[in-house]
Image (cartoon, rainbow over all chains, first blue to last red; front, top):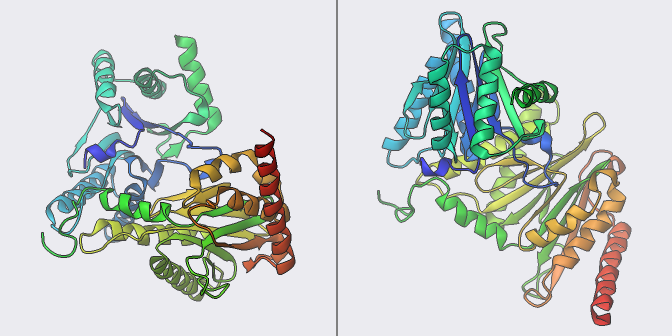
Length: 218
Length: 246
């Protein structure tokens, strides 16, 4: 199952002092595809969302389940399901698929970011084996080993990044690992932070701004 | 594990690869999303002269406002189309409005995906192309493949001639053309990717939904159908002439 998450795309998540972001590639296979329908970033609750890497149909199923679990939690407990609880629930479900004979593991890896009042911005990664963990930085997909190496060096230098630095690090990591300069339409970025705890995707203009900041810095 | 699916490794995507092969061996299906609607064209390969013309439909209506064209195992296709119709009827009964294409494709996608997850089930060997048009939102075209993946398109081709068809489709300025113009283009592409040697006889099935049909999915009227067929046959002859000149 871990092998099948190699969908050809790579995704990266980074968490700083008070914010977290996820970034993924956005490859549009050919001109005939309607670009508006291509996205791997999904909102799960108001303050959390995820990027899915791997088989698209399996990803949709997991996101649906995440949204359902979150809604159910809110109904039962009266408050929004925190990202660590969502991740734990999805991980447990994923684990059961590896153990139940007539089911198969889902071929997709989930990197979730979210914000809650108690812990602030958080970053979690859930893989098909049902393993999940909170991270300062993580990655999934084809270039995950290279990405992790790059991120380890950056986090070692500075683990208390502000929002802009978090986004910059994520973009720089993806750029470096894929050896590519991106156009705003080729990547998708989503952010949560103390400043703006609502999970949101950056618009093309905002992505462009971030790419420019990175280019000028170099 | 035992049972009919004992020999299939429960590796994600393994069974689905074979289901996708079933689709790739089917007659070509092409759909185009134009300015004012969606056009479907199917290369219905006829294996026997005894078959009645117009039977074994490959394009279906889901409710009145959604058209579905199918490729792959036709018995599986019937199951999928029936499910889509049930979903649409349910939605209308609950919400008193026709089901939006997005809702239908989400549900159908998850339904089809469901059959890829359990060991006791096998995936559908079908790809469905779904299209709709309405006054407010314009035209929309979506494809669901055997893995349950839902994608949106301006132009989509599945089946035998998929690769060649896609190359042809990229040359057409699809989103700026009207349905009337696109009907002819669809017919032309189907005729051009049809393999005369391997599959002698085929029937062309054309349907559309758009402004001209007031948002109802219908088979293309006979006059337009004949015009499109002639256009397609003529363009084949023209390209043959080019070949012989060389």
